[in-house]
Length: 327
Image (tube, rainbow, N blue to C red; front, side, top):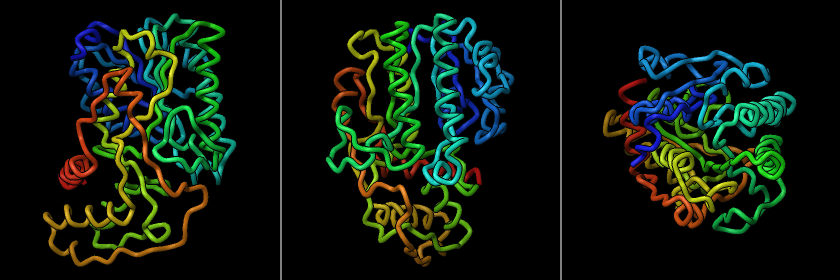
């Protein structure tokens, strides 16, 4: 399906991270030449260890806050898949300065480097947090609200910069607004771990997870394979109308946090029956969280021929299988 990428050189920033390492793996399987840039702030060496011996894979340890590093990484590159960022709404609330430096200054460095090295297309990780306080459902790309966190501000500024670089320098870009991505290699440890891997490790340790709020908040949980597909479509499409746009990257369905936790407990209990008896607890709502998230994926279907390969439950089952084997 993606044969046009076989002889292309693709830079994946944040390539040792959760999403980035899955992109590296998919591109290598296609036959692309892959350059991975990461500083291991949130990524892990073990995520890329299997690729280091591959002839078509090279790794640069470096920080996108350094312009020269970005310039060097973009030399001879056809496409950039920019995943490097400091994620997490709570992290950005605690330390807005570092989130701004990485997510905005680092992003600008990468745009400049891509422009200077005549990169064909710059595809970047945008975020559903950009919808902010907009209450309309489903979320449609053209209707956003005010951002609710410093992280959301940084991701919206990314979209503004990308649009400006097309208008000013004619650099083609595509932004992918990720909706609650989960799956293999997502780190369950650390203060800012995403909710699914965090709950997985707690259940496996026979601990009761605590939901922020009463569990009625809902999310468009999106399995990693759907996200990989969107990135590959974004760099391979020859539809000129698809360029210089932002796209929801999601399933187009929503699940409450309570239902997600119950499904997770059920799937894990198939491996360890004791997990079925664990209680799910509830705590206060978390600052900066939006109540509900549901994406319209019509634009991605129309312009990029996107068809999600995994529903939430199919993805969750695969994720549980992976965690049980690897943790």
